[in-house]
Image (cartoon, rainbow, N blue to C red; front, side, top):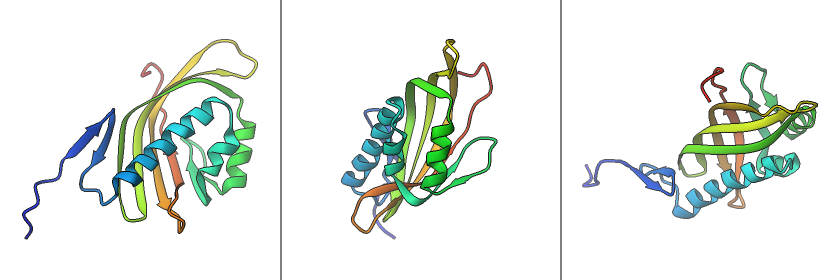
Length: 154
């Protein structure tokens, strides 16, 4: 038995790092930066840059739809999108992991316009990422799953 203190969560600038994690500070910061970069590129409409952050065998699991597997399927999904994102706010971000596997959970609130429309719409929910560290030491997103909360919950 060790003399370690009981596990607890550490909050830094709105992100919770679980200290049960065996991830280094550099790993935690890298994953947080990927999350922030993803949102910036998504807002800029740069789907190809978002896909670059993923593994080749990435799986996206959108709500109420079949999974998308691989970068080509996700590129098609993004090119078929008729939504123009205007704003995305992420909150309750939690990052945890061990070795070369990590996960990130977060709530989100987005505002968008559907192609051909003018009315600003809103959506909220949560998302889960599972990330893998590559042989070169870079983190890549391997799985993305998200939920969409019902109307009136934004």
